[in-house]
Length: 507
Image (cartoon, rainbow, N blue to C red):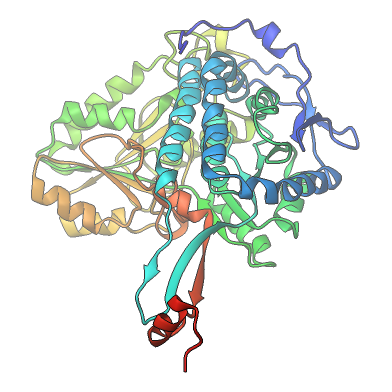
């Protein structure tokens, strides 16, 4: 297995025609429409990609439906081996996929390359766990009652912009292993690695089993969601996107998984070590991805007794984060991924100031002239914030940290749980009882104690409240792409067994 970190030549990687994968063929949009992604670090246009329309959506759904019967009828071992074989492509092409993702997102290259490897590891986890999918037998009476788990059919997975290849790899594993066929819809902001992946794997799966369609929301996403041939939908995205998709899916009552946003608290208790708490706070922001992460702990609730020390250490560390071109091997943060998000982040910096919080560091364009053409900003830390401020209540999805002080445990819990989000939370304390009781009290789907959110393999990931529906990254996700069928067999009475065993009719 080759996992060198050689950076491929950008020109050679981009010297290709990026096409969609539909029915085992690499195709353009039927009407020739295209999208032009932009490199946020330079402002330069990237290669044009297809902008799928309703005709392409129809073709993708038809291809997935045509492949469904054969795919679900395959012995599990054959499906398993084909899906697990996709990890070879992810590992062999990790440098290329990482580069494409960096060019589209502005994320640091070393992190994006690791995303491809992480996607391979997730497929391997699902491939191993899928052996344990079983039905049940119930002993209600003298008859036979059992269940089977069967695929839904054609699954649509709507992918986020921030972790393109990792999201794609992770998203295909559970539905394919359980016998569904899949249509992947990557973000129009970051479609290149998905299209390159489709080109690399098109001969590794039967035609139509995996389809990759790129397009904007009105031309592609909405027709896919509304299509009568789609049996199951999953989204990773914002709360607003989740609500919109749920409204559309409600027209046909299509089952959904929604992994949505968060305004995640990191709670620092007075016994926590300040240096360690700062380390966790910085790691938990995912600055290698400019904090474009639903699990980032951007809302820090620190006990008043250590507020001063914590804020001083945090600001000093954050100010040293190297914002640089994403391909710089020393870069610790790259460019904000697209202009609307960049403007949103700057708007929140202004909002924090206007509402009276103290901007301790960051929130500005870097002075380095080499970064002048890109969407760069220095990571920001606000202190003296109150729970009512927008920067303490709303998901920013960018490199802005808000520190809120507390001194009463019950009031702190009210603040921590007081939003409509409930995705992740982190608790920093050396008190075992406090750690467990606080983890139980937090209204969040994923709680980490004394460390940044780890997304551990096999740990169910998903949110409470408006942060989502369903769980991913675990056995729960595998089961989530199956539906339960009950089968009840009426057996002959036990009294007739003797006659049956001799072939004589009972008297």
